[in-house]
Image 1 (cartoon, rainbow, N blue to C red):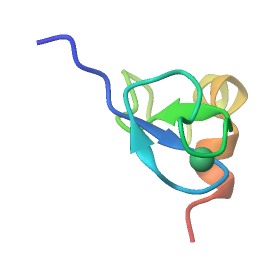
Image 2: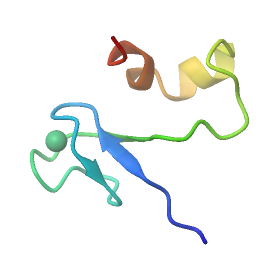
Image 3: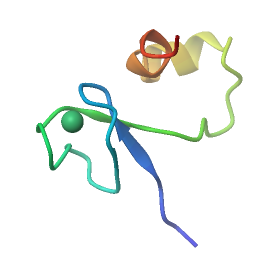
Image 4: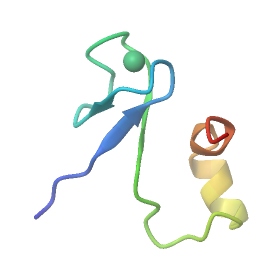
Amino acid sequence: MKSLLLKCLSCGRYTLASKCPNCKGDTVTVHPARYSPDDKYARHKNPGAYQERT
Ligand SMILES: [Zn+2]
């Protein structure tokens, strides 16, 4: 299985596309690969994923 679930940073829609089909916003992977949430590299690579979390 290679399906990577992505989430739109703008509207929060889940998709498999690299751009949101709903609002054309950037998407980020839902599952953090190998990095912990506190990993600096993960934050740099995927900053939006942490900004959205409330
Ligand atoms: Zn969107």
